[in-house]
Image (cartoon, rainbow over all chains, first blue to last red; front, side):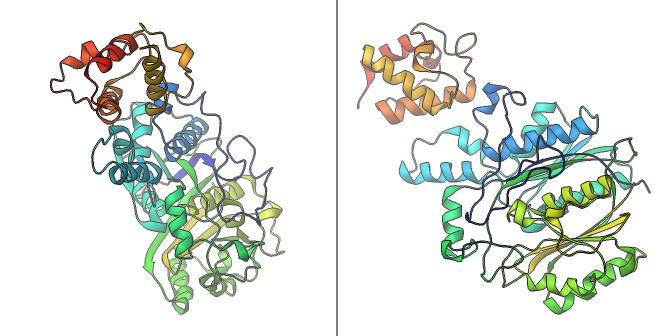
Length: 353
Length: 85
């Protein structure tokens, strides 16, 4: 079976992650319950005639994928696999609003065309002239991991050699208002917002896109190897420990073989208890968190993947993502664990090249 | 007629999201499709909806579109003659 190398990555997020080195400049938000992505300059990336119809999520996805391919020195991948929780929700809202406002008349094509979940993957393929396998997974908070799993299986079985895998999600005004109403988003009165010292339910919501070039050959600038991953729709808190232990066992690993654990804590006290259950398993190694930087959204775990792979490549953990004070000289294996509201659990194992 | 042309340019910029184009950049006789503004078939559909929504004009024969959407000048003339609102 072929190995699955991460040979390039691009990340657009609420931090300066696109044009800068790995987390060299970050801002920690404590006052906004919705944090918007810092948009790269699209003029050099997307022709103006095409960009005028593209929603934010599509543009972020195009930018992240362009960087991921460039880093891997790949012009056109064999396949494009995307994960998204809510797709192009901004255009969906515009289309539905027009439907209601105009009494189901005067429906214009652009918002409709751009409102489907697979617009991001489709626009990337159109831009590259990639006619290969193109698939979009819409599986809530395991959308990115579902895309990764598909890519990993295809690479391991030599069905494809180079796959662009990624995730994109955008915020939109009406959906954010609904999320506030149902307490998915933290209240203004819960300020200052914090992930580790939170005493409120709900999350700080955000958006972003992360793309990765996966190949079955190692390159000079490879980040890491995608070793294994597992997804599970639902788990009780008391099942998390055995979920992780059996995953490690399946991969012939013990707890002590893991050098860093990257956790998806998001400051929602109702569900961060899932991560507390993991703390005790990995209480002697560095623990990393990232949603104080990325915010929460369906594919925020792709930002965590970017953090984990960058730690393996750089062999260093930036201070700003450290949850504890344990140090290690070398990092060989990183385990990521994420869940959202007690559902959509994922484990991803990366190793040093 | 001059006011209608200005209004039309403004609406086209808004509906078609022509972010980098100002009203002054569009000449009355510039072709809307091809070499001029460079609009495409999706834009043509947007313009058909614009005529219906804003001026109450429904194009019964799509073949008419080619002549009507040639330029701002031809569009404004057709609207002035056929508008119902």
